[in-house]
Image (cartoon, rainbow, N blue to C red; front, side, top):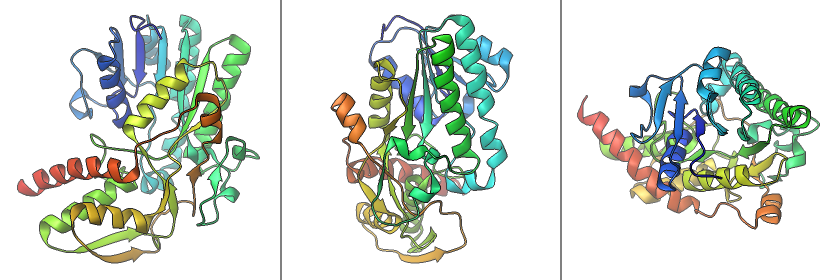
Length: 329
């Protein structure tokens, strides 16, 4: 991409958006506009070299303002969180369809050059994810459609919107299905955090308070893969700049159970905790992993940061946040 062409990062005040804006700055992009619904003092990262705006992109007039004058769009904006949030806020998750719809319409009107949509592994059919075994999900496993209720349906519908805007109006859309992105500078408490950040927080709290116990949602046998934020950012820009037009997995193929995830974080922290299982808590599907056959074939690339390495960075950052919060209470 032309580094002088104006680029919009929708959801720029969020976890992935903040890291993407920082990366674009480091790569010499000269005109970056970051837009988010949250007030600026609630953004995870604010970069002085970017134009930062607070706009509600679920409104068409706000989408028009955000898109005006830009050449490329990365749409990361959505009302979402970890499993506890998406299982209990299906309507809010579905309403994110307004964001992508209005951005697509504004992009078409503005004559935008390229439009990237961040989809999710939650689009995959539930009957493909009933086993705790390591069964990687291929791109074609999204159909026949039976995605995660609420959040997954919105993502799958928005994928189709991108496809039809490309086919009917010539808008160059690209779609990647993210698999559990984690890392520092993200949500780590409050109910929207995902499993890696939540477990890092719980382990840090246990270590710092001396209460060597941890609460785990489900029985801990549910299996996932987790992609470090640096791999997500690199893969996003690679897919956006490419000629590949179909939805594609963007995730690590290194899967672990939640129990194994806890053990890794315990080892990083140097503690062993007594585990208590909340069997009635939201836990999602039993097994979900990324099949990276297609991304390796098309790009000769896949995420490479090991889970252990990524969690070491993430735990240190979360532990600092926990320590700071405990010192003020």
